[in-house]
Image 1 (cartoon, rainbow, N blue to C red):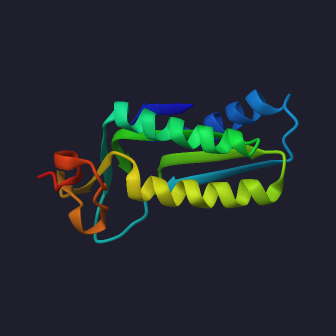
Image 2 (cartoon, rainbow, N blue to C red; image 1 turned 90 degrees about the vertical axis):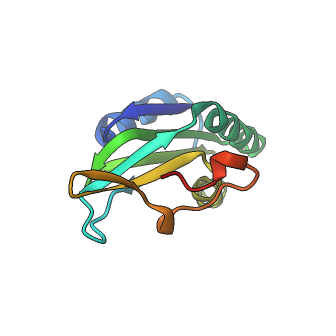
Length: 149
């Protein structure tokens, strides 16, 4: 399940809800990853654009990989502006075995950074500017993989 939100994520609500949704299953491990906007290069925050159809397809591929291991993935991401020290990204793995969950969350987060169709902008001096130097080109995305100005 991919959840998209306008603005910063409500981390306690999302994490608590996901945990409650999965407690009836026989998972031995629940590993969340919470990404927050850090203070760097004088930014006031970040802003995100998302192409949901490609993101959904990408995520469904990962759900299939997880299911083959007896695991489940969940993900939430922000659209629009997220200020310093707020969360823009949460991913979680539920798995019967700890090792599967640890390996899956690492692979998932790394592939997310490399492949998800999400464009990051710096919020600085009241302006929104594409963060080209901290963005990863999406392989095979054609014009969606290039720099956005």
